[in-house]
Image 1 (cartoon, rainbow, N blue to C red):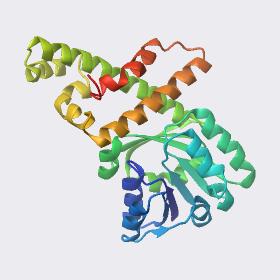
Image 2 (image 1 turned 90 degrees about the vertical axis):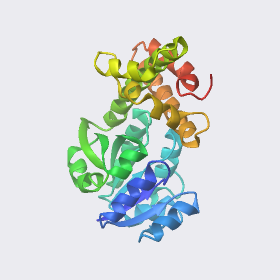
Image 3 (image 1 turned 60 degrees about the vertical axis):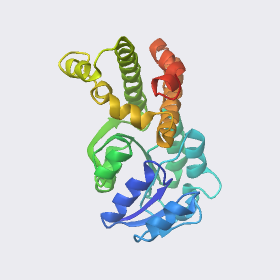
Length: 275
């Protein structure tokens, strides 16, 4: 299958590498030369702009930072839609507002191009290990065409409904994750300051309804997300951005999200980026 990938960062690079390892004909694009050169050494083709990826691929995946970048890469000058042929599928993996991907689907439809929002959970380690969870919005038939590509990195692939519902599902899931982070942070720091043995507390937490993956793996979590960890700071920004989109969606739907607003304000502290 002819595939393409735009955005070779924290998530995009390992996913693209898996697509290539599975034997697909892959063309990649990123603003940085280094990840493209590394994938080229493994057999990928390199493009000069997203339009070239659109010309090459039956399925184009993208993992870029935010809504504005998604719009630019897909529908901007020299974007994917400038080169895509009828029947092409554009897959947005970025965590964005549902309306962004819905707008892109409207633009792409007259060109005969399909759009899916296939949001991801599991981080770069999940991508590397092929254990990602995919939350997909859009036409179920398009998902089935993409499934062999998704399965190169995903162990769990869910169809969440119409286009935009993958993004909405991811925002809801991210709210739950971040609130879990806040509760684990406050409880663990209270115990630590009181002189409680954190190993004992973690054993207790695992046996009670206080259990969470964050609490279960507290020391590893603190090392990964600490202020001295560059990847931790990057992940913090992505989570914070997702909370912004979730709060915006909640406001539009008339759904109060006071706890989410609080965790957004406290997020640097929750992630160990400040005391």
